[in-house]
Length: 104
Image (cartoon, rainbow, N blue to C red; front, side, top):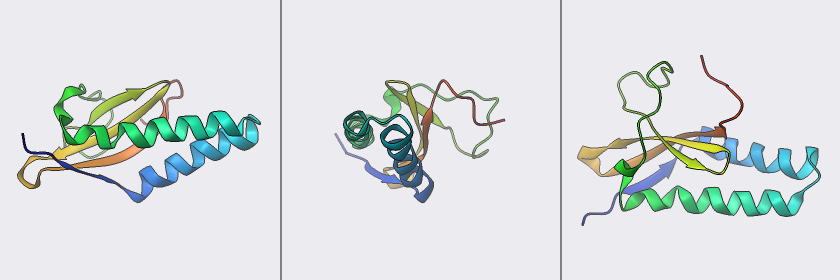
């Protein structure tokens, strides 16, 4: 099986940083922040073996119109990404708390 390369956009990296900072600082739980950051950073690379295992993200959100955005659920967070099949690349677009609606 051909593995895909997984990349995180600057936005996804910033999202990860913001999530960790919020949990650590605002919720006063630095251990939980580190544990979640580990889970999220381990989940994204797991897409290299089978990026199509996660379902497509809702059509009502138009993040990147020409891409089929998929969602990988990790705890209460969504990792949104698309696959560039011709290049065997998975591009992680954003990471956010799925209980908070941030797009429209």
